[in-house]
Picture (spheres, protein in one colour):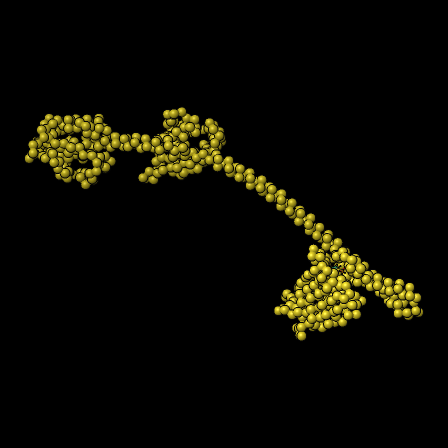
Length: 537
Ligand code: ADP
């Protein structure tokens, strides 16, 4: 292969490293002087990634041996090959390789220093190119972001501010204060309480590597609330290399928080007011309850006293009336006999009424004595039937009982069940059944319960009245009711007594055909109360 004709050294560098033309020209001049007019036959400038650490410090000839041979420029026999590594800051930036036909002493040594200068110049130029490229990319990036941003370097120089920053602070296009303090002076009038921000910034300048989050209220050119986030970034050695200041618009957030706080305040006020009202109502209610209890007590005391007071003269009236009726002071004229019977009848009704009222007042006060015991329910019914057969209302009416052959003893108050429940239901059945009718009393034992049904073939009760007949003083308005005496208290007392036993009472009826009252009671004592008091309220 033909060797290339030698060319002037200066020509060998034309087009090399265009980023630093002056440095290249300078080096070419020095290389010309060292190599001489004979020029070089092959030259190559290699940029990039050769690892020169191992070749740095070795001779140029040795370094050249490591360079791959070029296929189009084989060195001629006798050529001298040179390799000049270009190293800046211990990093390879390139290598200049050339062949020379005749050896000239000391070329490599003479070029070592200029090569270093060239390397530094190239490195610097390349860094500048990179810096400009990075700045442009940053610019493009931050311009796209709608968040106002400013970038400062380690010397507090403003490297970059984006369009959003300019718009937010009223800076004109292309306006960019040199330093951070100049920038701050420029935008300071935009903020309320700027002196507070001065302090924060001064503090940051003292400790730049510590990030900051500041809240700032802007009054000009727009009313906004910014959260300024200062994010410093360290260099490789942990020193301060620069920072980004980002201005986040949190106006809406603050407004919402304000609204939320107002809402919570008003809610709190309303809750407080309602609580006060509630407390007041509760106190009023407690007082009213207390007053009601007192009045109730007064009423119970009054009824109790009155009933007792009424009983004494009543007993006297009945006693003397009975003596008169028995003819103890001589035979009475037929008229007088009727009067005495009238007095005795009215007195009896009055006595029943007084007794009923007294019982109810005791039931209300929880002082109704039950005196429960184990009793035979069959015996109880048989006893009631014997009494009913001689009752004045029983004439011309059939009285039938249906009793099981045997029944267990039940835990109940014989007095209360007999008088207030059984007799009351049976006498009602007699009262509201015309002569010729039938009254049936049936005892049944179910699991855990015993029940008594009192059925009659009397006038019956209209459906809509069935619930009301258990109310106090309630009487169905019928001719038969009016014909019979009554107070309307019997069923109310019966219901209370049954419920004290833990049982139920219910009425069914068909007007004109008759009625049925069913009482269902537990066999055993109810609840955890001691047996003797199980039925005492
Ligand atoms: P009194 O019998 O003293 O009026 P009660 O409380 O015992 O009071 O009864 C209330 C009302 O229920 C009676 O007035 C009557 O109208 C109605 N009543 C009760 N039992 C019967 C019955 N077996 N048949 C028809 N009506 C009845």
